[in-house]
Image 1: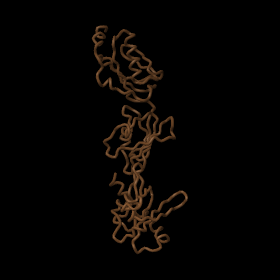
Image 2: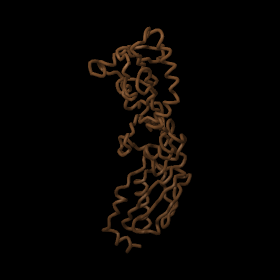
Image 3: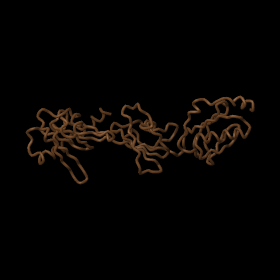
Image 4: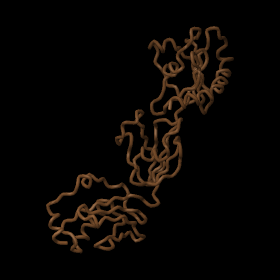
Amino acid sequence: MDNLGASQAGASPPAATQAAVPMPAPIAAGDFLDVSEFRTPEFHSSVRVSAAGTVKLPMIGEVQLGGLDEQQAALAIETALIAKGMLLHPRVSVLVTSYAGQDVSVLGEVTRPGVYPFTLHHRLLDLISAASGLSPNAGRLVNVFHRDDAKTPHPVVLDPSGTDTTADHNPELAPGDTVQVSRAGLVYVIGDVVRPGGFPVDPAQGLTVVQALSLAWGPSMNAATRKAILIREQKGGRTLTTLDLKRMIHGQEPDQPIHDRDILFVPDSTAKNLWNKTVESAIQSAVGVTLYSALVYSQRY
C-alpha cells in the first residue's frame, strides 16, 4: 500500500472534488454519506452514521464523524488512513446524500404543500420543484423562515423568467426551514370599461390604478373618467376615494398603488348620486366577477 501512496504524492484531486461545497448542516446520527478516495475505487462506500456518530469504512474500520461538516469529515478519514499506514497522501471526498429527521416545510401557493426531506438538492427552487411547482394563484414573493428564528421572514423574489437561479432568487436552505409561497392578490376593475373583471396583483411587484385600468382595456367611450371611485376594505371600515383617471392617464396627477381586493369603479357619464347608489352595486359587481377572475388567474400563470 506504501507504493500506492507514493504514486499519489504528486497527484491532485479532480476538479469536482476541489469544487465541492460543504452542506450547511453538521453530520448527525442517521445521515447517509457517500465516501470515496479518488485513486482507490475499492474504498468507495455508502454508509449510514450510527447513533454514536461513527461510520465503518473499509481498510480503517470505525471513524468518528458526528458533528463535522463534509470537509472536516474528509480530513478525519484522511488522517485515519495515514495513521493506519494504508495511504500516504489520501484524497477523500465526503458527500451527505440524505439528512435524517431534518426536513423543510413548503407551504402556501404550491401544488403539493408538505414536508420534504433535506437532501442533496436543497436550494429554494429544488424544494418548490419537489412540491410539484407553484400553484396558478402563486405570487413571486416567497418568505423563508429559519428554524432558529421562526418569526422573522426572509423575503425572496422569484425571477419571473425562471432563468436566473443565482443566490438572490434561489438561496440555499437549511434543515428545519419553512418556505411560505405568497398568493398573488386580486383587484377588481368594473363599471364602464372595455373588459371588466378581476386581475392579479403580484405582492412583489405591485400594481397601480392606471396599470389596472389598462388590464381592463381602458375606459369605454361613455365612461366618466373624472369621477372614478377606488373602494378599499380596511379594518376600520370601507374607504372611498374619487379619482380623476383622465388626468392620471395623461400624467397630470400622480398614479396610485392599488392593493389586493381593491375595487376600481368607473361610472358612465350619466350616473348620478355616485356616493349613495353606485358603491353597493360596485361591490356586488366585484363579487359577480369572482368566477371570471379565477379564469384570468389560470391564463396569467
